[in-house]
Amino acid sequence: MENKISQEELIPVQFGGEDNDCSTYEKAKAVIVPVPYGKTVCYKPGTENGPRAILDASRNLELFDDELGKDTYRIGIHTAAELEVHNFPPEEMVAQVEKKVASLIKDSKFPIIVGGEHTVSVGAVRALAKANKDMSVLYLDAHYDMRDSFKGLKLSHACVARRISEICPTTIVGSRSFSKEEKNALPNPNVHVFNVYDILDIPNWKEKIKDSVRDSLYISIDLDVLDPSIMPSVGTPEPGGLGWYEILDLLHYIIEHKELVGMDIVELCPIKDMVAPDFMAAKLIYRLLGYNFVGGKKIASKKDNNGTKKEGQ
Image 1 (cartoon, rainbow, N blue to C red):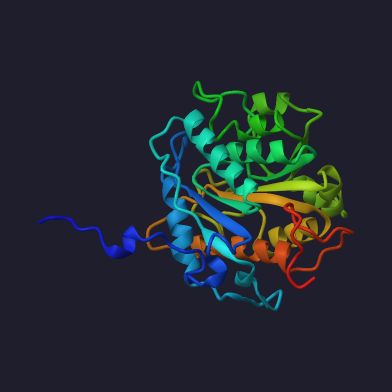
Image 2 (tube, one colour):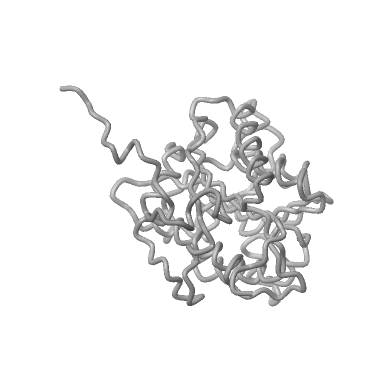
């Protein structure tokens, strides 16, 4: 019997599940770029399925944000067609992500990269660092990802923070696993590290993290920064991670004080019939867009990275 592809599978999934006037590319402030890639993973395979799982879960989001009391979707959230890079070597995949993000910058759009493994972040950072000369990266991850190479690859999910720190200053937060090589790579003048146990011992940890990054900021979130009790669907889980309200508290505080130029959510490795982690990832994206575009800011300038006034301000 011939396998048929349903019409639903042929149609790109709009984040939030609704096509409306706000979600057209022309009107949207934010553009989600799905990058289904998992070629360098070394433990649990399947991160290439992460973007579709997040988009599918996003259909069930309550679009009225209960914390912010606003309809975040009205800023305009457009979902681009996924980048067809599944079988590309890492260098070509990163180049395609960089090219796509550069086009979004040219069109004054706020990019959200949805992975896929963490290597996808390198392309986004390359493009945004060229447009924002004084940018730094807040890198939330259970691992340092500071190897110079891994299994012969310079562009590997285990080397992402190393490659990013060669582009711009990088602050790693939530880490709790690293190799001797990575430990010996520090201290590095371009890298700040806040391990989970450091956070527990520092009363003003949010302020310390804020002070370690520049005003122009890209946020990269590997979902394994969260504790596996609430986020088991990752390629390389590590016990002892952040909780839901801890990550929201930190990122709300950071976004209040910095100008966010882009972000990514990566490393979701969906588990069959376990939808809660997929939904959590989708809600995290939506909540952070709310913080950035409709939430209050505590900085003098109330414009986004493209000079657009924040909604409601």
